[in-house]
Amino acid sequence: MDLELKPDFDESYARYEAFWNRSVLDRPPVCITLPITRESVPRPQTALGTRVASDEIEQHAMESLPPALTKKYQDHRSRWLDLPGRVEREVWRLEHTHFLGDALPVAWPNMGPEIFSAWCGAGYEFGETTTWSLPVVDDWERDGPRCRFDESHPLFLATIELTDLLIEAGRGRFIVGLTDFHAGGDHLAALRDPEQLAIDLIDQPEAIKPMLDAAATDYFRAYDLFYDRLRAACMPATSWLPLVHFGRYYIPSNDFSAMISPAMFEEFFLPGIAEECAFFDRSIYHLDGPDALRHLDLILEISDLDAIQFVPGAGNEEMERWIPIYQKIQQAGKAQMILDVRLSNLDLLFENLSPAGIYVGSVGEVNDQETADAVLRRFAEWR
Image (cartoon, rainbow, N blue to C red; front, side, top):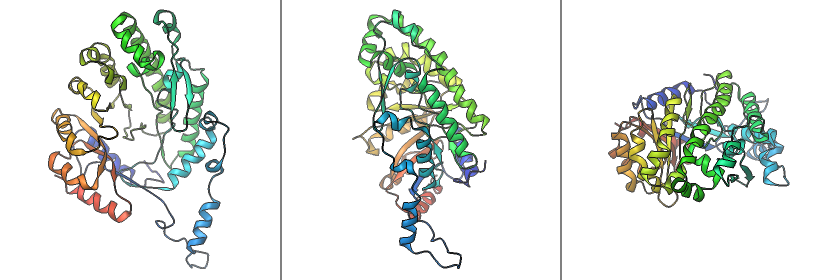
């Protein structure tokens, strides 16, 4: 696959495929990005071959800012739904980023974490950097049947349009991802309210399982509508976790599970997660926070699950504390994504884990090309 913004895509893709197969080539996939600044770009030449002065470069950069970067909006919703403006901003961001190591130029058509629930009837609010749903189920028997995927919903049509615009802008240049689907327990929590759903699991469990079954049918249909667009454009599948695969790839999750016991998780939600993993060709489970670790043993038993991303959460970033968790995942035969590795933690990582089946989503404290090259050499020496 030839990509203008990632000329070595094929080399990186081979590392991703090794990751999915719990093996390693020359090194694990390692992602490092740096902003392109006037200091990091070779000085362009004039027609006479002389170097352009720094102040001229800076002036040119300011003049070339797309109007969408400075456009004012009357509210957050207007900004989120200015689709041409979003494409313009996203293209500018990608063009001004160095994608080092195995970092990929991915344009992600983000409509917020509960957009699938909006397509199924939930209210939806837009904030500065995120969105949230407004519950619409007061009674499962009365309201539940109305909460089905609606292909005519304005926000579904907007997500389709945004994806199509990015695909057109990205041909031969960058990859377009899938939007952020939250199905299963998170979807029902968005429709009902998390605290109310937790009570419902005790008071009216008979209402929950049919809703989960119906939602899964809708989810797989919605996923394929986007996936088919990417494949028609000869693009691989990727998303907010920018792993990549030329086949169905996605990120099963259940953030709501932090509120319930392993027994309840196993009864109500584990079967649906296993169904998702069977539907996808490649999957990585997003395990969000220490409170979700109580379900790790059950998740590791899902035979079709390829990988796990454990996110310790804010204030819990110290790697030493989580080495036993990473080792447990690796010993269970699952690949895993470690989101943020600091330079000071490289030795800890190398000494306690095997490089096979490891994907490093970012390396902190890397601020220049020279440091990035040195880090990648160290990963290549990891055995």
